[in-house]
Length: 262
Image (cartoon, rainbow, N blue to C red; front, top):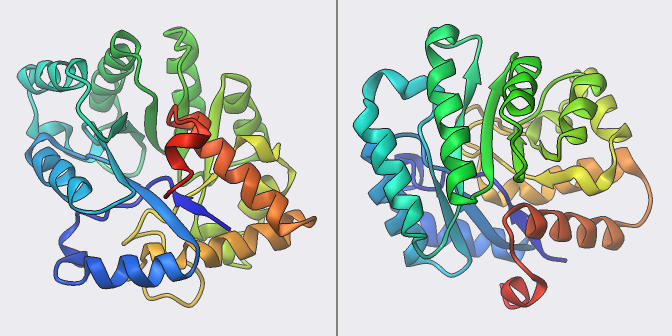
């Protein structure tokens, strides 16, 4: 069984001094790769450097809605220029998006829309942060007629919202939320969605699964999320793992041969 963590902040200082040990433990649980999202320009160099240090690690470049106030138009130009160069191991633009609970939502819109445009121009997939803004994210993607691949990561919304996003070609990120019995709405949604629209992620060190202390999440726990998803969905575990691997390959534009050895 090969699992890929589609969204993990493995560059964060929480993992300093223990990355190799974490990866070894995670590999023993079935992990074969992970993708590190970028959240602000200041961190892009660190993201790319850490991805280059370990086999099976990839990264994204983007400006997270929490940090738009730290950036200027020059940073959007730098993002476009960096993606035009198509740096090795960079697989998407992200994470970008909207967050109703953190910062000024109105002020986040221009940054999200600009990054959707850059993804269109550079032909990269999008990794989207959406907190209580699924309808707004849908509206922007629809209005922009974005035709690329999209991961709406850490999804926690309704079945209707997820279905509308999937209709636009989005993938839904399945994380630690589904391991919490009280997260009934999200668990019910994930259980009902088309399995070929789902990808696994930890969002580590955040979004901890049941029983893991807040801020102590890790790619080691991706297998726990997989187990919860298998229980919700029923059916064969090997078939589910194969489908999830195929989904993340489609999301990030990989083919089977590119990930067969990871």
